[in-house]
Amino acid sequence: MADLRTPLEGVRVVDLTSYIAGSYAATMLADLGADVVKVESLEGDSFRELPGFFAWNRGKRSIALNLKAPEGRAVVERLARDGDVVMENMRPGVADRLGVGEAALRALNPRLIYCSTTAFGSTGPFVDRPGFDPVLQGMAGIMALQGFGGPPQYIRVALVDYYAAALTAQAVLAALFVRERTGVGQKVETSLLHAVTALQAGNFVDYPGKQSVFRDNPTYRLYQAGDGEWLFLACGNQSFWVKLCQALGLEALAHDPRFASWMLRLDNREVLLPILEARFRSRPRDAWLEELRTHDIPAGPVHTIDEFRRHPLTRHHGMAREYDHPEVGRLTLPGSPLLFSRTPTRDVGPPPTLGQHTDEILRAAGYDEAELTDLRARKVIR
Image (cartoon, rainbow, N blue to C red; front, top):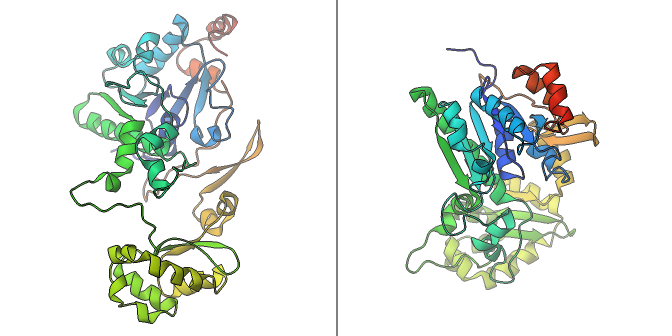
């Protein structure tokens, strides 16, 4: 058995994606040690103008080429022939029209894993429609849920995109595992639609008499403390409820039949909520957090992203990495979220500048200097 230094050492990925879900999925593979070549247009990924691009594409090598030119398509074919995974998130049919679809590339390399991430799936009534994270948030009930029965609320973290990325990476890893046992690649796919459904596995459940989840739960919500700062109380079961009553000096409520279960506390929230709000307003946030900690009650402060980025906990776990980047200067990115005892993930480094590795990648693929000069003169590569 090979002595691997990283989980995906030696795995070669051709990344034809853009935006978030597809690009971040490929970054997850780079975090695990895969060599990810990001194939961009001569103008670059359309999301390069957004700050998030840096995190969605860290650790990749960039090649800039014109896929609409036969010579540009030939580059992708050569990379796919020697690669393990091709990833794309174009609308269904676009990759085929460009000549880089599953049928064309897997004909060159039957061991290839071909991965598609779409908005609404590769078949069905919405197959031709564009889709982005907030569109799916709205369609799938997330915005209504976040509004607690009032006006819908847009969650500004692209949670559908990020979960679609995680599912995409999961599918690729499973397909690589199957290939190890069978020697044959396959096509795998998911979509924002699939992701937003799976993301709400608990909420999606339905049955006769199911109670609405729109009601404000007094023991699972935000509270403002006496100094104006906010904390979140996550008192999720009866055991925590009893300890919470002790921590707040409200022992008489611990076994009050009106509050004897999660659902009863919801049913009687008009009585309980003002009591807890007044109690939390009686002391500063940090005092309450310490009191809750000593009673083993899940709770935490509300931070800005800047505070979280600088937090000792974030730094301790290596989740804030700093680099010198030629375009923006000192750049902070998230670190890899996975830990392995024998094949640790690596610090993949910052994202590439557009076309930073074009010559390096093409030389390794067998192109000589004259060919590079010719391709650049004809605006096939940048």
